[in-house]
Length: 149
Ligand SMILES: C[S@@+](CC[C@H](N)C(=O)[O-])C[C@H]1O[C@@H](n2cnc3c(N)ncnc32)[C@H](O)[C@@H]1O
Image 1 (tube, rainbow, N blue to C red):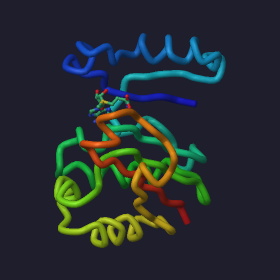
Image 2 (image 1 turned 135 degrees about the vertical axis):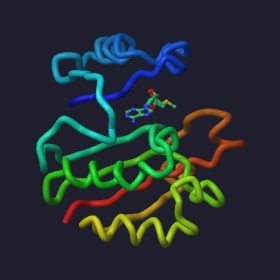
Image 3 (image 1 turned 90 degrees about the vertical axis):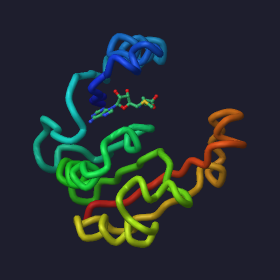
Image 4 (image 1 turned 120 degrees about the vertical axis):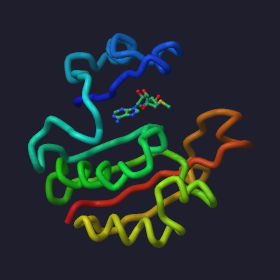
């Protein structure tokens, strides 16, 4: 497992740091299988088809709007054929406009054009995962998933 982030100053003030990620891996007893590195999701230093699974957690909405197609392209590029991606973020209702599209259907079509099949968006509340009170009552969060052809 390779974890990447640009670990901005803003988020490090809230405790999101590379050291924090390493400590989490140690606490979860998986540090022997995990490495973490500074890099941008817009320019991943990995080979084409290197990963079976790509997961993004609450990073998608942070990336500036014109760059989000690049983000999808990078995910599709580093995935091996048959590999899947899972993005946890805001996609419901008017949130989808953050991704420079007018509807969820348009977003799914764009992703399909990158060689992704079975792209779908599922509300977090339908998955049984509970991230706490804010996500239950105030922020609608979704899982966006798909598979590289
Ligand atoms: C809301 S935090 C989520 C952190 C963590 N993934 C989580 O789920 O707890 C958003 C993160 O996106 C990172 N980020 C923003 N732009 C990025 C980029 N271009 N490449 C990689 N990470 C980025 C920030 O540094 C920050 O750590």
